[in-house]
Length: 199
Image: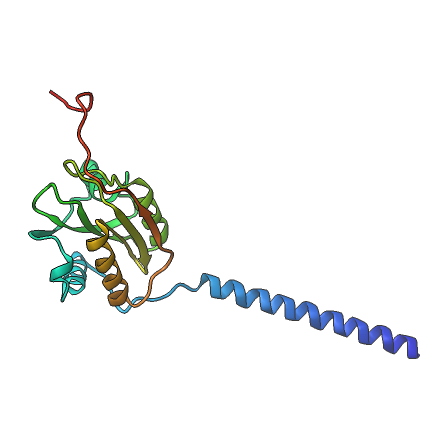
């Protein structure tokens, strides 16, 4: 009888330990799946332009002159790739970009609204890996930041003096963000070799 009670007690203890482990694993998994929510709702290109304007508020000293914010034609594959590094518009609803009107200033602030059900983080990662940081005449973006939140993937690249304050203000305005992707280049000017020139 005493032996049976011992076995029963051990069995109950094992069951309790297993249940605690299952519940604990479930909680950890749920927390990992839960993504942060932004303070900003993006449902249109207008919302994206307003977000850029909010980020630029009070940033005059941290921005290049003559910036132009525009909606990008996502049906033009070459234009889409130039601004985002993306090779397909399949999961993209809209793209808004802010860049200088003078082509020799390395600065780009890109917002990509993804379609419902698309993982914005994977789009931000693709952008960070595929964007050409030397797309300007004779200059390269020294610093690149990319992240995402909700249905928005973002990329900021420029010199450190312009990119970092803009990216930090963006995160502050958004209030939340997912994985961050950061790249550093030398940012130096380079000469186009004769082989690269097209006549």
